[in-house]
Image 1: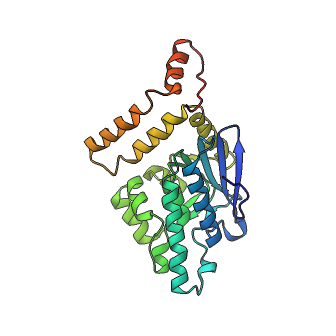
Image 2 (image 1 turned 180 degrees about the vertical axis):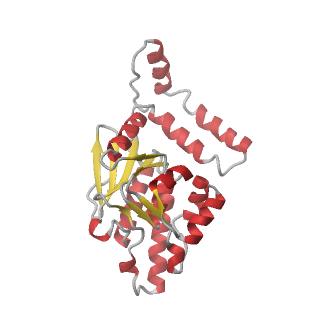
Image 3 (image 1 turned 90 degrees about the horizontal axis):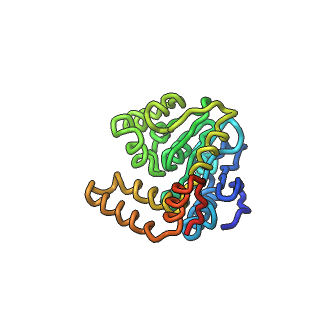
Amino acid sequence: MREDFETLILERIDDHLLVVTLNRPKAANSMSSQMGHELSELWRALYVDVEDVRCIVLTGAGDRVFSAGADLKERNNMPDEDFGKQHAAFEQGMLAMLDVPVPIIAAVNGAAYGGGCEFAVAADFAYASTNARFALTEITLGIMPGAMGTQNLPRAVGVRRAKEIILTGKPFSAEEALEWGVVNKVCAPDKLMEEALETARTICNNAPIAVRQAKKSISMATQLGLKTGYAFEIEAYNRMIPTEDRVEGIRAYNEKRKPEFKGR
């Protein structure tokens, strides 16, 4: 996994925590073609090899905007053929984000409009600053959400609420996002990253194989029937029985000490 991206800042925190910052503050951290390709490359690299990363926090540069979604200035007068090619790259990037084996926490530090809102609901879960605002405004621009918004948002807030959000295009507050299930917690602006990192560190301290298997199994919950989903869960569970981490977890509990998980 390379770390010298043009539109992303990658920062290792502690041993196993990766912070990914959308870094186009002069363009409201909007997603240009370049950012789309770089995010896709990053997510795909982590799918192939997570290295020692156990959790990811995704945020935006600055203190006002998480992401304004697609870069509409770049899209102005873009030929239909080029528009289609660009969006195809974005589509592949979103699918690759869903396939990242380790948890992704969105730390929404400001406005999350369009694709920015879709990033928040594509993450495994999200924390938001009190000054965050959310909206899926695509309908007001003659198009519709195209980064899995019509799929992930109903899973987060329910079908009827998702229809209201998408079909009106109206913005909503961080408090409404919490009430409706878009985010898990609302934090003071100066505490957002601290709280997101604290939760990420808690995840990093847990057995990494168990975390990855549990994430994979939970993700299947809305895609399979109950018994088929349970069969998937047991298959994921059984893969952990022979791991060193499982033995270490039980041993540490009985020895009344903190476990030292190795990811083996």
